[in-house]
Amino acid sequence: MRRSRRGSHRSHSPRPAVMALSVLSLVSTLAAGTAAAADKVLLLASTTSTEQSGLFDHLLPRFHNATGIEVRVVAVGTGQAFALARRGDADALLVHDPAGEAALIAAGHASERADIMFNDYVLIGPTEDPAAIDEAPTAAEAFARIAAAEAPFTSRGDDSGTHRAEQRLWAAAGIEPSAPWYRELGSAMGATLNTAAAMDAYALADRASWATFVNRQALAVLFECDEALFNGYASLLLSRERHPHLRHDLAEQWHDWLLSEEGQDAIAEFRLDGEPLFFPAVL
Amino acid sequence: MPETDNAFQSALTLLLSLDPMLVSIVTLSLQVSLAAVLIGAVIGLPLGAALALWRFPGRGLVVTLLNAFMGLPPVVAGLVIYLLLSRAGPLGNLGLLFTPTAMVIAQTLLVLPIIAALTRDHIDTLWQEYREQLSSFGITRLGAMPGLLWDARFTLMTVVLAGFGRASAEVGAVLIVGGNIEGVTRVMTTAIALETSRGNLALALGLGLVLLGLVALVNAAAYLIGERARRRLG
Image (cartoon, rainbow over the protein chains, first blue to last red):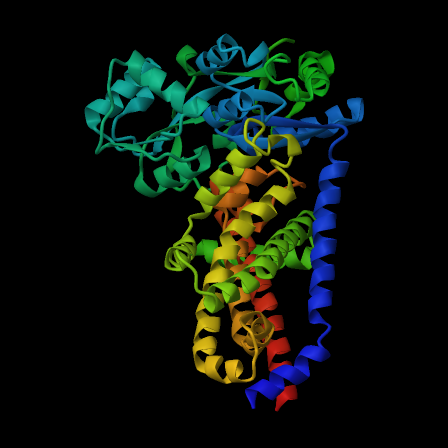
């Protein structure tokens, strides 16, 4: 019985043809998307903090109006952004880790670096503040108090710019943080803040990520405004010799625009709830 | 739990307002996952059937590997495809990294083992059952393959749906090879991950509900088509 069924239905089934057609149309749509993208598109590797703040939604349309270039942002941790640059997978970088930037230039992958904008890091913690860091005179002292109180501290632990800044701050405090109170999450900023909120832990965050973070629960800014908490963002151009296939001309236009009066003004104009999140470095 | 209430609210708002960003994200999600499933099915169904029908040295190893690859972590699939498509990788000059095509390739790698392994399992059972009968009619293995696949079509549709579920649910692979670029490679799962990291839990859960509804719709459509075909057969 089964056999006869098989025989009779094979003949009048249009489905394989329909399927093949839809595969073709899907594949061609996707291929067309790639081909059209080839002309004036710049791939920028940047940090999650700049992307999540909405800064790019503010800057990119202005840059596109001025130059006709479409910037595609891949938002990753600064460590991963450097890895993308080394493998030749990004046309330009906007990152915040001075030591890593210098290393990239020293290794010959990046050819030019310019300070674009800055803001600062803030120390976040539960409002009860068990380590009493809100009265600390310096950032190093605030970190020392957290360690002395062995209060839970959630660290990015992902080799991002913020993670590297945090490690510098521990070193400045002369402390080697350790488990169990020091919790390395290996997560992005937002995930780290979500975790900190859930376990009433301290955390270091960049001001833009904190400002855009919704799920605060009992968390608040407990320590801020110290020179050691400076957070500078730089634009990096990659080496033409090392990575000849990249869209260097477009990258240079982007780099120059960020440094131009128009670009710097656009950064200064960006507001979240009326508050500036980034300050132009050149103006 | 205020998040869940707000999630339903934001899911409703998103759907009712037909937010253009949401529409583009949903469209791309469907395009990428359906393309991956179609390619996975076109390769996986005959591959699975062939593995069930033919005996060759090392077949046990191939079958075991295929079964093991059903558990391939998406993030590993993403990393492998990233290394292949990266400029420094062997296929770098194709310039496919951070495009929807790269996402289709990565998801195909996840879907293919599921479709091939489960197809092999089903066809193997059928083949054991009908082998003697088919052979007595002088039907070769190659000749029996389309018939066996057709006979198992209702089960195989579930297999393909399992592949679609895997593709539409994963975030690890598309995040690495797609880059979650707004308007270009952002899909439902990467958008949910992004909103979660913004602490926008209600919106993230709302997007999750939309995704769940979407997957349910695709499954319902497949179920209805299957039922209709079954009824037609009596």
